Image (tube, rainbow, N blue to C red):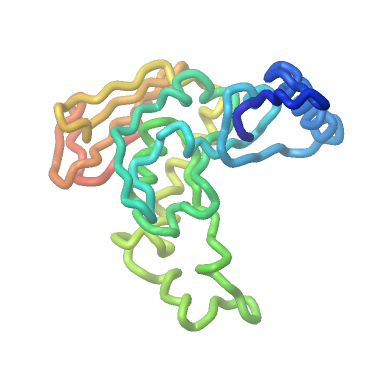
Length: 217
């Protein structure tokens, strides 16, 4: 879903409003057939017509696996649209592609579902088993963010999202000057405490180990 554009060519002029109208007409054809609509590069104009959007282009990254880009993450998209559309990581930048725990903590803080989809280039299968040079990706310890331990740690977050996906993200705040400790509150009354630091932290009266989150219901 790219941004809306205009065209100034005299033979086929188009305003941004007309561009949106044409795209919505196309999307509605799929919706009328009961199709699920998913796209990278989520845009707000597409929210009413999409089920899942990759919100990478909204600057939500905790870390970009390939570039190392680390902006200060803030959930503007989730604060507005969390209950309207699912937000996921790009299929080429999932937990399994590196920095998995950082991405999981990002999703916990912002109310997203975990993105555990395996990458085809990492999980090429032969006779139902990974290639020998990729086999260890299933069994590395949890610090790599690629193995089955990461799937286990994401389970609680997945269940929380299943219970609360229709709820608004009502409030998000950082609790320290380094912006590594945060508290999120949802319209159903639940809260999520996140410690992205490398040290034990006390958040809202709860002791959180390094690199962890806790759901308060």
